Length: 139
Image (cartoon, rainbow, N blue to C red):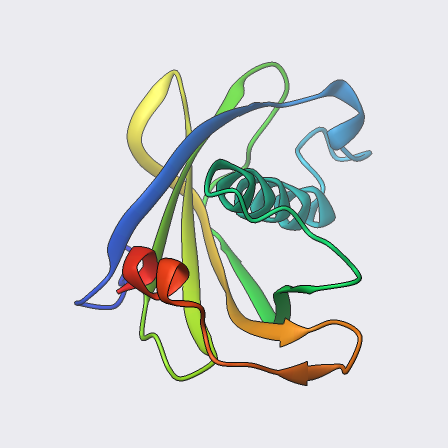
């Protein structure tokens, strides 16, 4: 299946996530909620790799919209290869995207999702301009 990502996307991160037995549901495939956990894990690990650990007393990212499209069933055992992209930086936000492949079936997209991500002042609960270091990464 062909996945349409924005034309001006930028690959910013990739990682593998093991599929756990507990990620599956009664139908024998990975539960749809687990895909959102995989997306979250990739997003958080990516931010950690940039030195952007969440700090409730400071500033950081929040997700204001998230989605996932399912193309093929993931099943235990295996590893999910996450490839994360960014696009469309605005004054305080950017889009993040991710594709999910099985490590033993490279090039085949099993699911793809993304999120609108906003930089905020956590205490004030208001958006703030993207810091220069993050804008350089997502642009």
